[in-house]
Every structure is written in structure tokens, then in C-alpha cells.
Image (cartoon, rainbow, N blue to C red):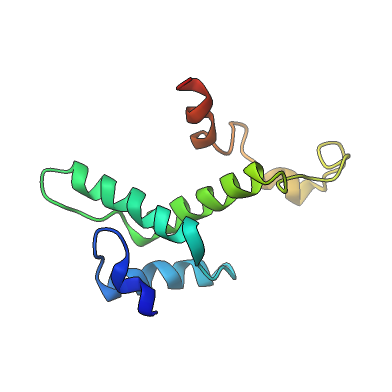
Length: 112
């Protein structure tokens, strides 16, 4: 993509392609503010090391997905049906771990 060369941290084309392909496996086509913000976040992580080192493509893709969920929550579109917690087939129950799925969004409320 033409916009990829202007991503924060100036990632290589190969790195961007790897992250995109990881997301495409799940049917996600990255774009918009969350895409740029994910690269800003990844660049900040890479800069925090003594030698600049990008996170793994799967980690950057995960950051993007977390940011998408935060956008959905902010826009009040991250909702499940009323009985979704009560009516779950066994395969669905097995998908959820015992601990909380997302710790990142809580950081914002704890910082206040």
C-alpha cells in the first residue's frame, strides 16, 4: 500500500506484509487510525530496547486487534446478546480461558 511507507518507525515492506498476512488469515484488512496507532505502539516498543527491534508480526497484529476492540468499545458497538453469557455451547466455553481476555483496556482506568 502507498500509505505503508509513511507508517511510524518506517517498518520494512517485508515486516508490513508479514503483519498484513497474519491479519488476513482471520479475514481482517487493516486500515485507518487503528492501523497507524498499532505501528506507533510497535515502534515505541522497538525503541524501548537497547538495539531497535520490532515486535513479531503476530504481536503487532495482536496490538492492532486490541486497538480495534477498544474502538468498538468506545463506540458502544462491542456488545453481545443479552443471554450470551448464559447460553454457550461447550465448544464456545472451551474457547474462553479462565482468566480475563483483555488486560490492556483496564490499564487506562487504573491510571486515573
